[in-house]
Image 1 (cartoon, rainbow, N blue to C red):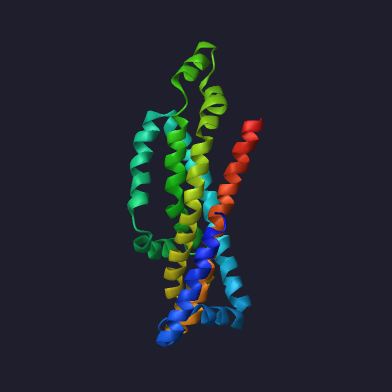
Image 2 (image 1 turned 180 degrees about the horizontal axis):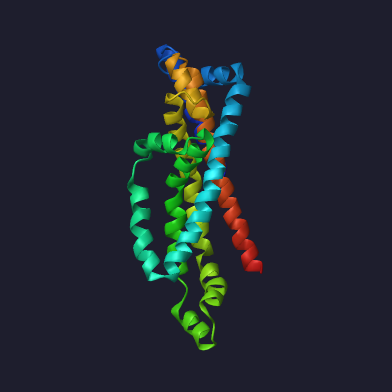
Length: 249
């Protein structure tokens, strides 16, 4: 059963290559897997360096989104005034298309790397914030009453009860935000690449499109897909490890 995804993927690649070969579709329209691999092997260093640049932006944005999400979630869980002030703006950030505001952010921030991180952080922020906020209020009411009965203050209740209760929610939000941070980084790189800032795999995709190097474009897309899969499974393994250590503790 565990080999099913790999076998299905291999079968799909074989069918894809056979369909391209039988129908004799030009590689500049739909390249087959063999042509995509050949395009990657023609310049593996350049594509991998661009992937590394995109991943640096992704992980920087993920760390920043996690820190801001937890901080603001604790704030709204601790104060009704902060909740009323912050929550509407968090929703606004969630529903605003990053493509629409990325050019403004790039102009306002000025520094190319920092502007990419800001764009990706905006995309990745909300799942951590919303999940952690939900987790902070999920602690059983009887335990909260017990803390009050024994004179536990707000800080003790937050540290010993609410934050541990929110940990599974935070980890679930972090896993979602990992993929969104990659998406945000790529979208920001597309906008920056259109403006002449050459960095990341998104720029390589634009460059290949301008030159009609479609197999190279697909190679970059495959690398992005693989990076997204690795990030997802890596964060899932991290969450399992944390929860296992918590259970042992």
